[in-house]
Image 1 (spheres, protein in one colour):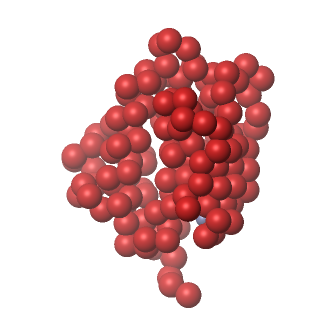
Image 2: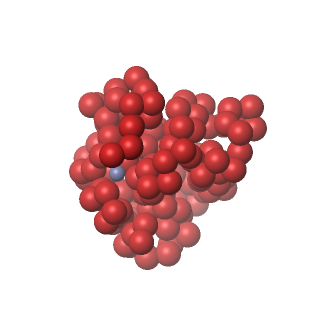
Length: 150
Ligand code: ZN
């Protein structure tokens, strides 16, 4: 067992306990199922998309603290964003958790999402942290309704 303590920062735990935008979305225009078989994380992402971007967003599912908190914080970050802004956030977040960008200063748009920087040291957890984001990108690009980290 590797030690996850340093990942479990306060904000992550808080989002895990009280996930934001949790529950199905009545006005959803698309829905993507995501799964990370390595960890057992599952989620359904609901989006209300229009020509402007993400009007509303919600998710349901079960998984580890990292996947739940990441989904919760992702929904907060992309609500009201244009498609281009949401895609850009995906890229920045992905770089952050895969250790390709040295956190914060490089990507001020990430805001609180920088708490996931520590995930880069745990390759298996990268899939937990990016599951909801991959579902988001699939929805934005109309790439189908099922995504898997495998
Ligand atoms: Zn997980």
